[in-house]
Amino acid sequence: MFCSAILILAMLCAAGAHAQRRTIYLKDSISLCSVKKMTFSLDTTQMCSPAISVPFKHVRVVDVRFDTTMVDYFTMINSTLTVSTKNYKVTMEAPVGSSLTRLLSHYYKNNYTDEKDAELIIFLKKLNVASVDGFNQSDLYNYRKINFVAEAFLKKGNYAYAACKIDTVIQIQLPGSARKKYVQHIADSLIMPAINLLERKISNTDWTAVLQRKMFDTAFVYRHYCLDRFNLPILNEPYNKGVYKTAKEFVTNKPSITAFTVLEKAKGVDILEDAAGNTIPMLHYFGYCDGKICWIMTDVHASPLFRVGNTFEYFAHFNYRADYSLYGGTAFSSNVDVAFLAGLDLEN
Image 1 (cartoon, rainbow, N blue to C red):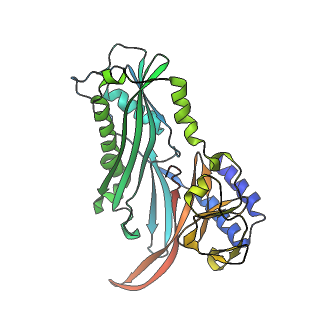
Image 2: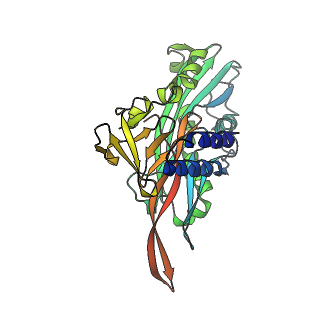
Image 3: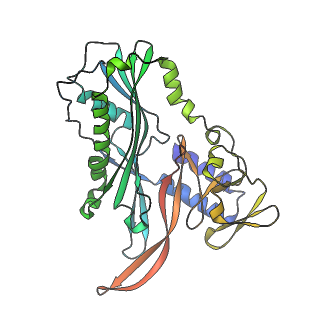
């Protein structure tokens, strides 16, 4: 259903676009629909110390991330004869909220009290793996980090109390042997350690102090996390035509340059000119909207943005240096345009 809608929209929107942008949009639309998933399972055998007592009977994890379809992107580059890429979305075997609910419910299975109406509600705001800033493209999968943000409330009856919060970043260097088992290695070395930190945070919470805090109506809490945080102009308004100098201008749907012209060059490179005919340097803007499609600037050319849930995905195009060997030595090298699937972080 999603891919059908994307392709129909691609044909309708591209009908009036220039040739180069039409080609790029259709190509990336088809590529997005061909992205497959790589899944992993979590270790659900761990259990909390029997000495810990928690004042709730149930645990529920609510996934309120902007993109609930993945926890990581993985791009496989094949440069045997010609350079090609395969993009994957890495995620859990079951929906993330359900998977973490099952894991934490089992973890505290022997620690629950008899307060049947009490429930620990955990709002998962961030759980995503990414490359570490500052490393070059050849080290893309050598250094990885996880961004993990979750906020927990103790619900009793119709009211909820702020219990605890975790906001952390964990960074690792992957051994070369881990690349063949990349997905499970990420689960064991990044995701499980992050969850373990949350478990320790919950187990060490002073619940007496929690119940002395301000009460919130449970419906208000759900509305705040499930609706209000997605109340961004770019997600709820028609796209305004113009040039976005910054990511903030994009999120607020307020381009600072509204009169401009797109000049297409070879290989799909877009040159933007303002109303006076002055060229707008690529390094000086985040992206632009042609009135129908939003584009983001990447290393090679502008890439179309595709709405996925409450965020946008795109293919970041880079010049990739491919070395071809012959009889043990490097015969020749070439720079090739390769595409990495990526997503926007609308929170930062």
